[in-house]
Length: 289
Figure 1: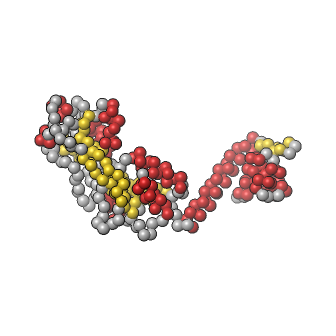
Figure 2: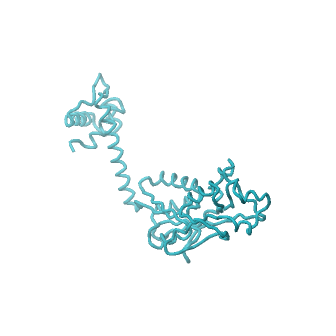
Figure 3: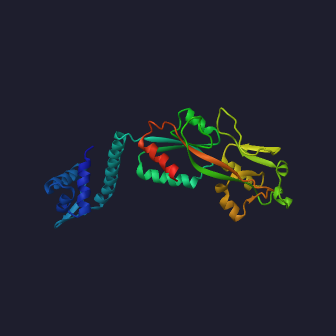
């Protein structure tokens, strides 16, 4: 490189503070040092960056363009220093979260936003799963934090959420045309859609699976689209379908008895004794939220 970060810092200070004398006071360098540094910068670049009128310095057109790039360079250098400092303190460069798909996503985004403010240099890798897939990721050493309906035996865990499932269908689905309360025997005559366990080494099912006809899918959004098209019914998390129920795109099935189902979600840290500060902070945010 022809230039140095310090030259760009002095140049930026002259522009921000309106002159060499003002920059000298702001960054605690002698005026002669700053003047020489900026002069050398212009000489090395072969471009005039500033024009001095009286005691004030003004940007040239070329100077304005290069200042913008110089500011980006200084910002990146500052972030590099911050990252090195974080690594020195034991801050993890990456965290892996295994997340059960029924976890409320607005809460997830709120947690991640707060986390990013405290640990902007820690990368987050999110693996979404259904049922037993999270345990598999944890056991394979591919998750630092697990949010799941099932937890490994003997592992410390913390309850962080309860999710309500409702039986729903399209408003024009045949089950809605019975015009009476619906029994489980009635439901068994219609097609049900369920989401497949994402674990490769198990085949766990959850909830009521009494329908004679069944479609199994691998992603939650596919299940929801099938219901919206009137092709089947399902128990779906209430927070997934709030808007659909409000606008009449979906309807709850009028069951003869309360058919709401609940699942509890738990937080598990893969290595609680050796977890770094970023992992502990993220776990605390999930637990608090």
